[in-house]
Image 1 (cartoon, rainbow, N blue to C red):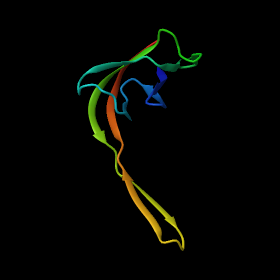
Image 2 (cartoon, rainbow, N blue to C red):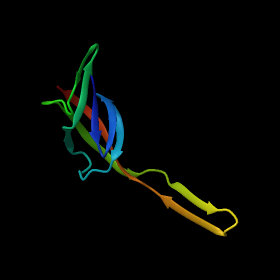
Image 3 (cartoon, rainbow, N blue to C red):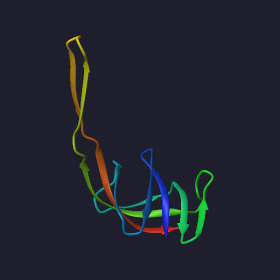
Image 4 (cartoon, rainbow, N blue to C red):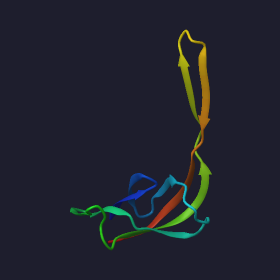
Amino acid sequence: MYAVIKTGGKQYRVATGEKLKIEQIPAAVGAEIVLDEILMVGEDDSVKIGTPRVSGASVKATVLSHGRHDKIRIFKMRRRKHYQKHQGHRQNYTEIRIDGISA
């Protein structure tokens, strides 16, 4: 069984037992969370698509850790104008493990 969830403005296809890095959410490490914004649930050949969400469906997950991704370096330059700008960014994330999908 798999599901398509929406969290942090992004969509993820998840299955039971998967580990996933999502946008940071305010939850303690080891806490169980319930993701209720389910866009699609599928099992073998049957697929249930929500409009926009599947009613009554939820995904249970456990928070494994919090962290920061690798640094992304941004470099802007205008030729012949002596303009150069260096910038960097590290995005926060929460790593979760999918424990169960209920439709």
